[in-house]
Amino acid sequence: MILIKNGRVMDPKTGFDQIGDVVLNDGKIWSVGEKTQGEFEQVIDAKGCIVAPGLIDVHVHFRDPGFTYKEDMITGSQAAAAGGFTTVVCMANTNPVVDNVDTLKEILERAKAMPIRVLQASAVSKGLKGKELVDFRSMKEAGAAGFTDDGIPLMDAGMLKKAMEMAKECDLPISLHEEDPAFIDAPGVNQGEVSKKLGYGGASALAEDVMVARDVMIAMETGAAVDIQHISSGNSVDLVRFARAHGADVAAEASPHHFSLTEEAVLEHGTLARMNPPLRTEWDRQKIIEGLKDGTIAMIATDHAPHSKEEKERVLSKAPSGIIGLETALALGITNLVKEGHLTMMELLEKMTINPARFYHLEQGSIEVSKPADLVIFCPDESYVVDGFCSKASNSPFIGAELYGKIKYTICDGKVVFEN
Ligand code: DOR
Ligand code: ZN
Image 1 (cartoon, rainbow, N blue to C red):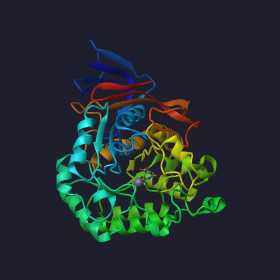
Image 2 (cartoon, helix red, strand yellow):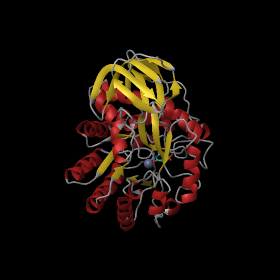
Image 3 (cartoon, rainbow, N blue to C red):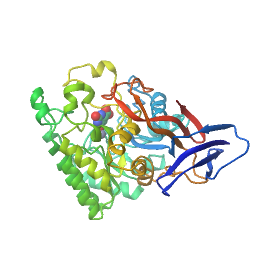
Image 4 (spheres, rainbow, N blue to C red):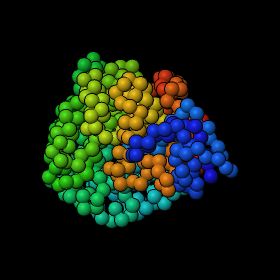
């Protein structure tokens, strides 16, 4: 038994918010709130800290198999634990692509040995080529957490409608990377003031908007649970709001970089601020914050996208898109959303625990008796400077930033998997 005492226990599922004790036993929550005495294997004093459900990230790239020079399942899991995450969903753009049962099973078999819960999404199309659908039913049976061709947009609307119908039949979400290449002159940087300054083609917000407009309508028609990934454009936030108001089962993810930074970051951080979809304008950032506030954007997901130093040292046009995010996500939420007065701590936690759990049908995401003992303990008022990562990669524009919200412990399945 582990006793966590004196912490502010916050459960966004039940609304529980009290200073008290939490006892863990045999991988499960044993008691919540009551002052507890007795014999324990470990006692954690959480005074001044928040005790929350382990964080859930439905959008990460662990690059395993195929690109393990960038990250692998072990280092990715360590980065997750260091960031307070106890459940992650890995994207399917690996090599081989996760478009078949054998690859999926091999990953899920190795995942069992990880310190955190590593789930895996299936691709939507064979080889991420957007031409032929995977076998949805057998991927669901083999344990896929959802379906996505993340990294690549699905351009064939007819095929996407079939994919949504299959996802609905499997009762799993389908998540979409929304960028129409017709409006991308060069990826990774917003088409606007900054791209003009740099003489770089850029990717227009229109690329996202036309895809989101199309896909929320197909979602409305099919009734599928659709997750708009890493929403970056203000108009797209409005489109998601419209779809939800009309009964579509559409959720959106905001990534910490899209609510924290704008296109200006490319001038300061170069390739470390290149990602798909790109950082946009302050207007877009404010629209994302507005969407987070009014519930249009239900989830925060990192799009943890590790790349090697060599790759990110290339010139802007040749470097790959993406930044790591697991180890800075909670602190960016606290610093830029909670401390700025946009969200309450409970609202932030909702978007990083129970909302993703509900959308992906996971039993995690709350602190309730007899539920899995997955917890994060962090000090919201303690600041620190970002310097170094557990991830194999360090492609982050937040190195050197001073952030609030230091993680003290991450506990998964009743075991301490990170301590600081
Ligand atoms: O910037 C990105 N990088 N966006 C994506 O959607 C994919 C990711 C990657 O795999 O590197
Ligand atoms: Zn993506």
